[in-house]
Structures are given as structure tokens and as C-alpha cells.
Length: 372
Image 1 (cartoon, one colour):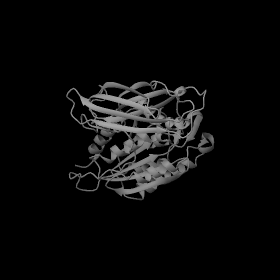
Image 2: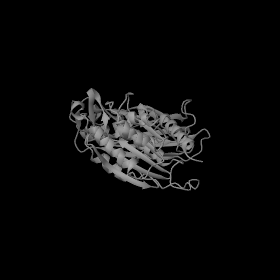
Image 3: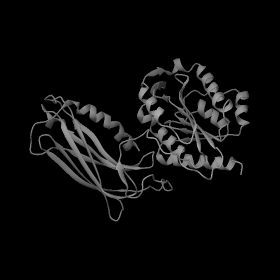
Image 4: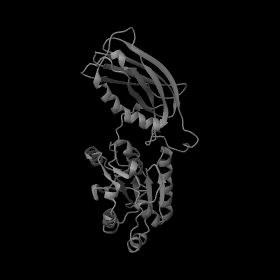
């Protein structure tokens, strides 16, 4: 999973780094390749490919213009069709002489279970090239067994992250009446030294994946999403109940958020709990009562509890509640305290199999509490 996140983050770093330029002519393009072995991501696809390193020295006083070609094909009886991926990295300014270091960038695809051969070529505008061939196998580990991989065996797709793509509503004929799921998405991240940070894309990856998987649930057919911020003490965007999760407003919201930070001590002075209580009352007491509630996000390190009188109102409704927590460390906070008071369960999202187990366990509890 760390390799996959590293892959996503460094795409942007590579593009920024390549704004320096290109190279003197030699007989061959010098490059090194590290194979990114298939790793399951939070959308239950295997991500695999290569991590390339090209010494900057060979681009002194030249403009960088690289074309990367990768061809991946199933082998050894794995079904499926070959997939070609091409992309270009270029910059308009030459690399100053004397600059040291490497240009680093990845090229990857998403895969189903199976064995594959990957062949790659990198060419620059001077006609130089380097190439390589690798084989790898995508399979579930012992701990991942039971996960329903989202791609068919041998299926290969471009790994470009259509993170906020919308999906068609799923037909659920076995649900003969509205079964409503309310999803609360927390947008705050507690960073180092007790500072609250805006979420970057790397923070939100497992949370958007959790929304997508919850939207495919066979236990619900109506979904409402409430994205909120303790820092701003407001609901940032809200989706009323509908047959699927709409990712379009979430995409716009993430692009607009700035990665600012504020001091934890200045933020947590009590008003955040007033906002939290008002939001829960509006969404759970003063509107349609949901058949299930899931909080998704990072826990905040202030251990406040709602008043007992308020908690009693929620308990009387008997709503199944869960918290999908993306925090690196387990601590008691506002969301967790509410979920525990509701006899709900917390699930830590640290690897893709955690998400699969969390959804399965939550749906089992929903079915156990649902009138037959």
C-alpha cells in the first residue's frame, strides 16, 4: 500500500521536476527501472508497473522531452487482452549544467488476478532510448483472501485515477422499500505537532474508495452524503437521499480546499462540539431516520462527548452505526465517542482488506438488526 501511495504522490513530483529540461547526446539513454509489484489498492484493483530513474546529468543544457511506452500482456494461461500505455513528459526550459540528481517518475496499470509480462521503452528527442522486460504475478495474499477484486482475471486498464468518477445506480430488487444509508465524511486531518490540516488527495483516497464501496452495498438503495469540517464548523457539501453516491460535488470540494493548517489549541475550544451536535440533530433527528449511519474520515484528538440527554434520543432510534477511521493512530475523539455511545463499531482503514472487512461486518450488523 505504501508503494501505491508513493506512486500517486510522485506523479506530481515528477511533472514538477521535469520542468528543468533535456540532455547532451550520448550513445544510449541511461535509466534504471524498479518494478512495482502488484499491490491491492482501496478500490480492490492490483496496481503494478515501473519506477524509473534517469540521471539529470545526461540532460544538461537540453530540453527534456521523453516518451514512455509500456505494453502489458497476460501470460501463462491468464485470460485477457494486451494493453498499451503511453505518455509524454516534457519541459520548455533546458536543464542548467551542473545540476545533479535524478528524474524519477512511474508508469503503471491496474490489473486483475493473473500473471503478466511488461515491456517498456523510454525515448528522448535526441533519439536515445532504454528499455526492459519484467514479469510479475497479481494474487491475493493469505490475509486478503475473500476480497472481491473489482477487475476480472487478466483484465488490464489504465491506472489513471478516475477517483471521483460517477457510477450507474445499482438495481436491488430484493429491497422492496427504501433502505437509507447516511454517510458523514469528515474533512479534517490531525497532523504532526497537534495541527489540524486540510486533507490532501493522499489523505482522501481511502475515504473516497469507502464511499464508492458503500454506494455498491446490497443492504441499502438510498444514499445521503454529508461532508463536514470541524475546522470550519460547517457542512461543506450535502447530498440528499438518492439511488447512488454523486461524486461530482466531492471532486469540486477537494479541489477548492487549501492545505492550510491551524494551531490545534486555537481550534478546539468547545464550539466544535456545538457544531457536531447541531449537525447530528439536523441529519438524524429532524429529517428522515436512516437505516444505517457510517462516519468516514480521520478521528480528532479531543475526547468530548455529547450530553447524555442528546445521546438518549439517538439510541431510541436503534440505528446501526459504524466509523471507518483513516487515522494512523487510535485515540478517543468526538466521532468515536458518539459511535461507541450508540453501540457501534470502529474500523481502522490502514490497508484495502480493512475496508472489505469493515463493510462486510457493518452489513452483517445491519441485517441482524433489520426487522424480518
